[in-house]
Image (cartoon, rainbow, N blue to C red; front, side, top):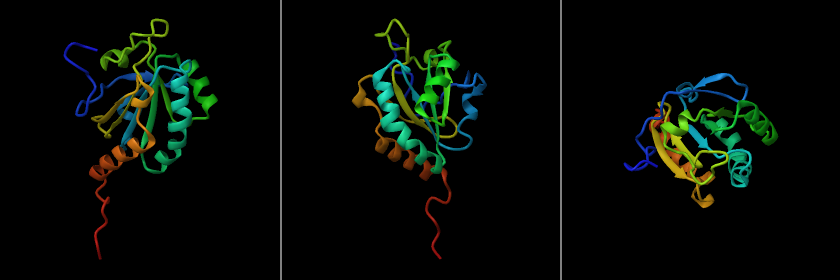
Length: 173
């Protein structure tokens, strides 16, 4: 982390970067929300048992709910698109996985995990952003219990959706 403190906090807009997805198709981060809130999951990778557990126990069960709630879910690691594709398929995940193999996003957000000198991964982080990619909430998951629970994400998304959706509260009669 920089001496000035964390780069990633509520109110910060995510950088406009293009990264390849699991099919090696370039995807612009700012295009991914498509007008909906975004859950961005920055993780170490397939080799991390904590990440595998988080994906299987929190994100996979929540993904179907997020689909019908008009929320986009994106996972990012420093692994290659081929590895991303295999990991995604093995999990039977349907959302977008992005490869930050060149560590552009990792550097821009100052989220290099310095304790792993073999993989040079992200500090595990989950955030909720509005459709303009302004960060609303951030969870640092270096310690597993610091990661967002499904209920944390629901509450954050409820606040974001209430601000975004003009029909959140229906008019009476």
